[in-house]
Length: 98
Length: 413
Ligand SMILES: Cc1cc2nc3c(=O)[nH]c(=O)nc-3n(C[C@H](O)[C@H](O)[C@H](O)COP(=O)(O)OP(=O)(O)OC[C@H]3O[C@@H](n4cnc5c(N)ncnc54)[C@H](O)[C@@H]3O)c2cc1C
Image (tube, rainbow over all chains, first blue to last red; front, side):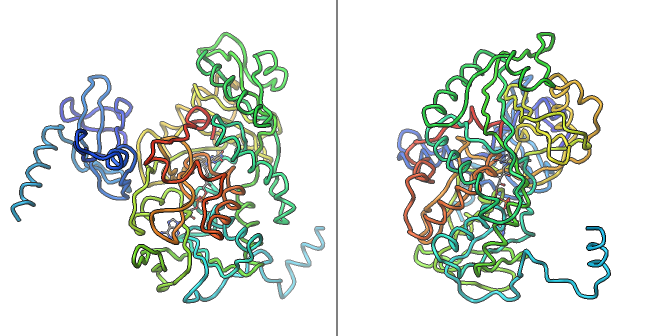
């Protein structure tokens, strides 16, 4: 990968970005057990395939989400954090209704 | 010798490959299945056979013998870690390495060169002192030396002040060594096979059969195989294989790249690492400068090489060794490193009964091949976590009991 497209700043050289690891669902810190919390902190899915992950555009301090294939290194889509969470909430609602 | 060679070439019949007796058919059951025929998997099979009399073993690999990180690594062997748990463990490995060519009856070209971890900042020097004290306390030969001593021991290194990052001192570890990586895999394979172990390449494990929380077998491209005990030693594929068994790991797969220069006459005896500059180098017996850096900036299941890696490496390397400007890069490659958050491995029991793990070796697992093989074999044979492996159990993440080795392992593999 040479260029990554930040949803706010557009396509930039990959050296401007910092990888933040896969997106995980955070358990509620107030109610999570120690085991749930340690799993959230340390365990990764680490899938060979398509994943959602955090990226930081360092010069502008912009965190965003990328959908990338970890085998081919092809970025399928990048989106703002808001877009990602709105989509996830919608998908969860759809699942509940089904 | 040339005549013998000529005679051999012209002879009608050649003896069988003396190293390996490939097993033609997979049996339906084994006592132990080892997933992964890298140095680690083969060492486990060897020590199970040699020390515990368990020989009904199948070692399965989806690729070829040592086609993973074992024959892609830069072969640095050392015991100068930071934590007492780590130092104790790697020290036992160095002791095993010293007798290993004899034990496996193959020339591993184990060569003790002396190992420098350079410090360019006060913080790095402080870590070096800390490591030296922990090392000495546990009987590992390490000391902090200044630029004058560095220049005396390694005259090719540029210790001048007239650089971007002057060298303030170094952690010097005389037993630091290199070895011939593929011979390690071949040696363990040869001696395991000689004792009755079956090794199958081109045999991927696609599924792990778990019944009532207990692992009983695996599905391969050649059909199902059942076993009393199963162990995975698959480095970069650790998370994917553990998922087949039904649990997750504290691991991310990130490429680690390396390269070698064209071969030249011996000019560098020592192994030189700079954590601050993110580079390390040694000269192989063949004369090539073997060089590497820290892992790639993001996770990937791929062994592709990049220009960014080479550029970053060389810009610092030229400061340390200006003569490198004359050399061309001969080969460049990568391996998939199974990185843990604390830069320490994950070994031993798992949440699945009869299923064992040997993973999280990231960028530092070659040196541990003998001790890990020996102690994992003990773990599998007895069904208990050996004392030496207790700090490295998968459980440690649950109890926040990490073994932080980042200061000693993030660049100096
Ligand atoms: C560039 C580089 C430099 C390094 N430098 C050093 C160093 O200087 N010092 C040091 O100590 N360590 C170093 N390391 C780390 C070291 O190479 C590894 O930790 C070590 O070799 C791991 O050995 P292994 O046998 O566990 O894994 P591997 O040798 O990777 O073997 C794993 C095997 O599992 C097989 N496999 C995977 N999935 C499956 C499946 N589903 N079914 C069947 N088989 C499967 C693979 O085909 C592979 O052959 C370096 C690594 C790299 C990449």
